[in-house]
Amino acid sequence: MKKQIEEILSPKVVKKAEEFKAQIINNNGDKIFQKYGNEAENIIQGRAINLAKKHFEEMKNTKLTELIKQSLLKSSITEQDVEVGADRYEEENELKEVSNLLDQLEELLKVHDWNYEYYDDYKKWKVGANSWAQITRIANRIESKGDKYKKDVNDLIKQYEPKLNENLTENIFKILRKK
Image (cartoon, rainbow, N blue to C red; front, side, top):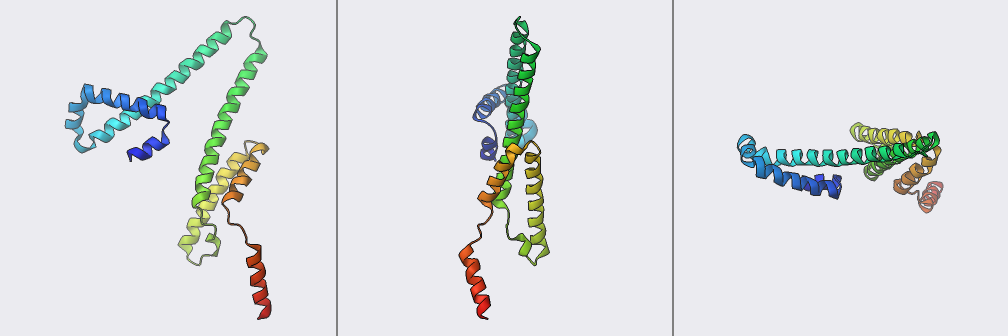
């Protein structure tokens, strides 16, 4: 489980979480282990991760605040400068969101059963249909961010959907014609 958590978090957060974990164990380890027993390690790990995330979020907010203060102190700042900064911020947030959505889409496409429509077993069909509905929802969310992302969505889908073998199709038609 620890490895799964580390794969999700950035290396900086993992490192900081380990520092917080050591501090927690040094300061209150005995009490925590007495109170929670076998679950103490997981509780300490979770608390350390939350503290590390909060630490980096506060650092980001502090840096952003400083940049805003510096910008406001400049006498040459114009309304256009503020608008450009806001546009960049929105673009960066949009890019982060689209990037996360594309990652989610790719993970779903990797495990999607492309033959679900042909199953006689309703449960298997339903799993495939739900998977496709989820893929469609994420693809639509990405495409709603602008036409510039449609190509990315289409490229991802083409990358994972099975390729129709034209020779196979021709051979099937030849066999069917002979009968």
